[in-house]
Length: 434
Image (cartoon, rainbow, N blue to C red):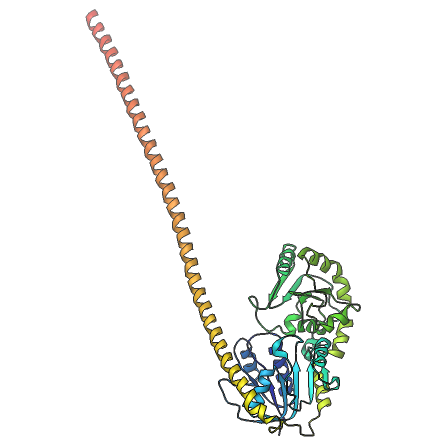
């Protein structure tokens, strides 16, 4: 029988950090370790939902569906509300328990107040590990599980890739103004730039797609992806950032999980543009160095095996349901009831907001069409006015021509009369001479 693993996360909707971590874990445990994988969440929606479906990964939105199986070999949890919910509301029991935190300051990433025999805490950076230790977690129970990259990204590394800067991708869900300005500068200089994230190309950036680019401007886990794929990377986003990373500033950038917070300053777009052009060749020449570094520190397979080795699966450490029973049965359950109730309200609110957005999009589209029609009508009216004025001008010209013709006819009549008179007199004179 395959070992059973339960992965828990607060929400699964976007191609963002925590969602992609769970997706990578679920794929690896299912496809490579042949585990029976179940994922639970409070929200399960597209666009990332389609990726779980395509990979035949079981996901249960526990606010809508039931978790039938309650016993697992491993509970791997991130986000404390789903951790509490799985234990107190769903009655999950597991031989081994892992709790993962992806941030030292994000509230959802806080560590559980009651340890519940957690075998191992995972921190995504040294900064997060230090924050855990300040909260009283024994350093021996914390393992730094960096943002890790699956083997497919290492497989697209091209050792003999040409050093050129013709195609750039910006990967961010919160692109700052200076990067938008930077994009314009590059495009004005015949460099193609593609944007990935909210409001742009919102899709999963595969290894094959990433390998098409000469430079990646990003922060976070995409930095490790670029290292593995051998793509020069520039670390900058809405926190600012160090830009080019080398042997000197690597440790500090990694401490802050390549978030850009290691510098605490933002720069003007033209300064960034010059920095990229001046440093690109050096960054290109560091590709192999960072590829080897990434294979040692950020390879998903290797890091998961280290975690499993640390916890083992040979002895039980399941949650003791009697431990802290007064708290668990009364206080935390009440907190969970309130949390879930408010969470459902917030999701309904978000749905309403999304529906309103769609409605407003249609309204805005209709208003746009109306304004376009008004502009077209206005243009037609101007054309009609111009035609009317032209017709009036022509009519006036015709009147003038008629007057001239009449005048010419009058003159002609006078001339003809004079000629006739003259000829008549000549004729009469001739007759008189006879």
